[in-house]
Length: 358
Length: 268
Image (cartoon, rainbow over all chains, first blue to last red; front, side):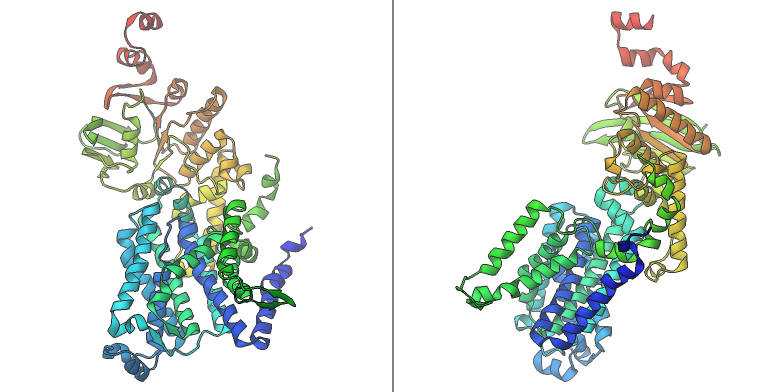
């Protein structure tokens, strides 16, 4: 007999219906402050998943997600701002940039493509490096991108940044983009490309001896990751409606890394618990850091309580669950899509063989 | 025998490999013909593995030429050679330990079942059929080696002999013309290595076109499997011949046993 947890209807309800109902409640009943936090969660899920894609699945430890996010945010903002606004806010902006005005979804796609192309260009030299060296070089790209944004004043308005974007990143839009992004990344992970990536992570020489091009696969994975980081950045810009170079610096870099590691680097769905913890905790704890009354209990003001709790939590997870919360299991996606792509079909056919005592 | 005829698969012409002044392989020349099993023996540090690494593209030779089906492959990278049909195993096990056995085999076999990124993203029929065929193909390879019941087990959780077999299965998924085995019996007990000999023979029977080159220290394995044996010492090939010839070769006996009374007594 089929177990209840394997039934299609059960999966459909737990993975699609319940989350959808929760989102509809949030969208209709909650105030803007909480809505913003939930939207931020979804954007963080994209960013963390993009990081997992390189760091956990392909095994190239990149810290550069924030730089690709920055490129996505700036490109997206420049494409959606009305021309007159760009001219008045950014002095000396080249005419061809000022004149462009695109619909949001086109801008979203282009910002992702820009980030991917940038990753492709820098990836060709830097992906020759391995391990820690690669981590340091990608951290370098974060710094380089920040100083570029600071100094290309005629396009980026320097350290003052750009503001006045429309709030296109509403909850339905963000959820749609997040689901699509995760779906695409999961599909790639379970395809031949993804198998190549996982093989490279396990053992580069062995993978190459089986016909997998180290350079091509790693570059492709780096670019895909940058594409989604760029999209995340563009969504982020249209949520905050004001961006500046300092927002895409080391704090953001390590926040993304924390989400990715906490949820489980080797799992795409691990991005969800990771991002949830890192996004919600500061808001939950904000009452403590300002002092006041919580559930009728008087709480003294504790400065920096957010950071302390987050660090302790992080250390505890690293000690007791080294691979992150989800480890390498893609619980959510495997439950959704397993039958055709994975060994689902194949398992059914050969169940008798596989059940043999080994 | 200057020009390569149709039956020659690999032809190595005066190949040397020098690492920072140390000559690991010194002006070696030999040929491998289609459908035969070759052995490469020699003491530690003789340059056997270096030679194998050069054929598989992991190391590029300092001088000389390596011809595969008549074409020079000196500078080819290992992944292009793998696609062209040169498969290899490693001295120490190099399985993707966290993956299941079937996934290990699928990685190698996927080159034959291609689809575009768009077909994959939209989950089209072409994509699903390719994946299905890949599953079936990989499973058949496991079945031929009689390890299909381990298909869904994590590779690093299996006994050593099975892991070795998985590595060979992975190579077979490439559908190779040339299979290079680097010490396949290392770390095996006599029973396991006897089984290995049986398995390799079985594999060769099913793919009679395939050439196999085995580096091995276990003489029982080499002598019972190989049609022709090359012996290396300090980077050079010192002798070659059929197993009987090698067993009686003065040079080889001297290499393994040295001079003196003990060697004399062994020889007698």
